[in-house]
Image (cartoon, rainbow, N blue to C red; front, side, top):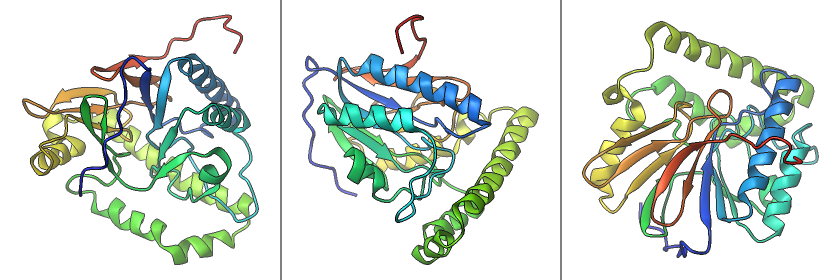
Amino acid sequence: MTLQEPEIIDPRAGKIYFASDFHLGIPNHDSSLEREKLLVRWLEDIRSDATAIYLMGDVFDFWFEYRTVVQKGYIRLLGKLAEISDSGIPIHLFKGNHDIWAFNYLSNELNIHLHRDKLIAVLGNKCFFLAHGDGRGPGDKSYKLMKKVFESRFNQWLFRWIHPDIGSQIARFFSNKSRYANEFKQEKFGAPPIEEEQLYKYCLLKAREHPEVDIFLFGHRHRPMDVSINDKARMVILGDWLYHFTYAVFDGEVLELKKFEPVENSGY
């Protein structure tokens, strides 16, 4: 993969924000709506000094774009994203494993830059390797096979013929089943040591292929993390908005992981 044309960001002009894994839609409407409102508050807080916003995948727990039907819900978030985009702040969205079926609706209606694969870009004085993080690294062959099934145009065409009410229920059933299995595994065995983390192994490999990269940045894994890969590069995992409410901010020179703690009575 070749290095993308550098995007020159003046550190004095503003900051770049990264967040991931909101999983809106679960575990129920009220809880999801509360997180959506919190997310909108965060977006409103950062827009004053943001030069770009990167949403690194799994914004929704399930998202499928029909040709003429818009999925129910998330109106506050979509409205805020449209407002920010219309103001001239670019918004980038990386497709995650839960919103893999995002096609062109968000691009056409909200002017969001949709990324379907990894991206290497120069931001400020750092070179970033950006991806959601699913299917990266060794192993996990069953998921990688399942992802190919989901990405098949023929299978997407077949799914479009299922009534949306039924299709969304099927998708959420498998999503919850997978999540509960992963949560049970972590509760029983704990988080793996960093040497066994798939994305860490992936970064070790990619750091040799791309020695120009300073920061490997992912979502997907839900556990916020900032670790060194070698003397030059580091791996940053953004965490999630189910438990951690974390994000990263880059001022052109330094990238920091932070937790969103909204100021009460802010009006949002």
